[in-house]
Length: 270
Image 1 (cartoon, helix red, strand yellow):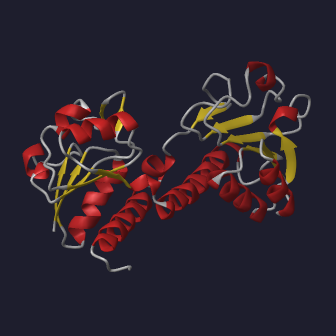
Image 2 (spheres, helix red, strand yellow; image 1 turned 180 degrees about the vertical axis):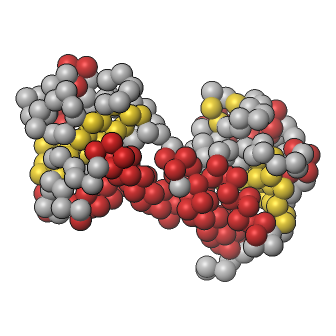
């Protein structure tokens, strides 16, 4: 089977290198290689980036072509996999008779990505604060929030979880974390020296954010900012950490997921 890896970041670059090292027939485009787009487009399986697009264009620094231009050059017989595919992109693909599978809907990949994100987030905090952390507030208790809290607790750091759902607060309390309702944060923020946000919407608006201590470090891990503070030394918007800080590990988890998807198609996991 032949593969075309088209666009993306260092994760996709490492993915193509990993596949080639295993003896897989792969052509990469838009990742600093010499292969042409035509060569990558001839592959039986097309691997597109995570996320697939930015503002309607392929997530590819070298050639951010409109998504429709790319889809017009693909064939219905090809297996096409991409990450974080938007509804509009599914509709465009259907117009060309294409079927796209979103590999980021696979739980094994989202969990692995969350674990990598948690590890990278702690590394960022260590670079700023050293090995000893002040009391930590984690906003949100989804996959990343859970794994982040688990690692911080293992380091012996006091952790408090802020969440909306009573179920999440109950689980957080059962794990031994402090808990706060997100709507009850006012007046309770000054005691935290480190805040991680995992919620992709504003949680700490400007009024609440000003209640944080002046030396509090905020690390926003969400795809949309949840803390209304200007980016700088004390507020870091750290999106897409797996591809930026751990591309080899992220590439390996993506390749395993692609192998699972193709094996299931062949009925090997039935």
